[in-house]
Figure 1 (cartoon, rainbow, N blue to C red):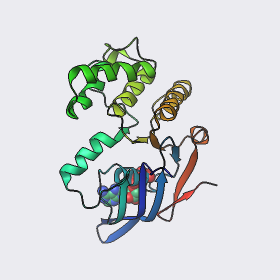
Figure 2: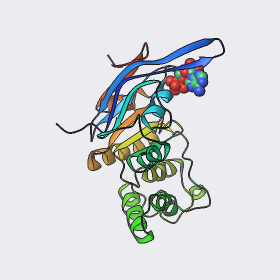
Figure 3: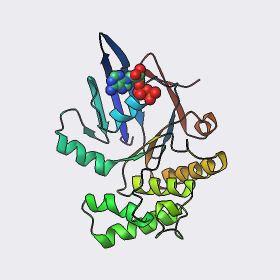
Figure 4: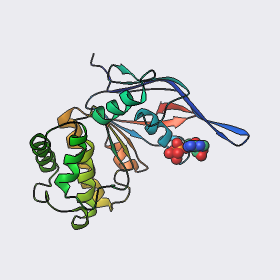
Length: 227
Ligand code: ADP
């Protein structure tokens, strides 16, 4: 049996709001395997962002354990968490957050340089991944010279530049028109299948959710399979 790319074991998280404590996650168990694309569908306020932040090591749970591959993360210091996040986890948001003064290629090179790759290595990988995502003819364009769908594909390329194990996406097609969104989703899907990446994708789009391997939701602070 392969090791899950992501495992949450009995993860709980509550927030204090004044006098009150709001329990958002109450014993979440979740596993996502390499090559698996899982849709997280839940109403606003249900805890999707909290779950993604905890899975992405941006926030720590109050209790429970988060494994990235075989690595248990609870006892890691900040430096080790940051390194793990940089190399093993990619993030895609609703807005692309690309650096406007840099080309598509440079936006994909940058995280690799931060991870310690040489310029030729990082450039070769940027060209390869942008090519796979259908952007071989847009390498030297800046974000402002790209369409919304192209910008989001560059954001996906940047997220997977360091060949992470896990991709976390929050409404990745939420800002795109349906046809463009479909195209970006299809590209993302092909990438997951081709690379063996594991993806957790929060979305309100039931149509897209149906096209993923599995659908989960949050109910009373726990992850359950969607009916
Ligand atoms: P979703 O992404 O599904 O909309 P969130 O994870 O953002 O849900 O939020 C879940 C609940 O936790 C909400 O009631 C929200 O108000 C609360 N919450 C989220 N982050 C914080 C925080 N930093 N401090 C206090 N309450 C928070």
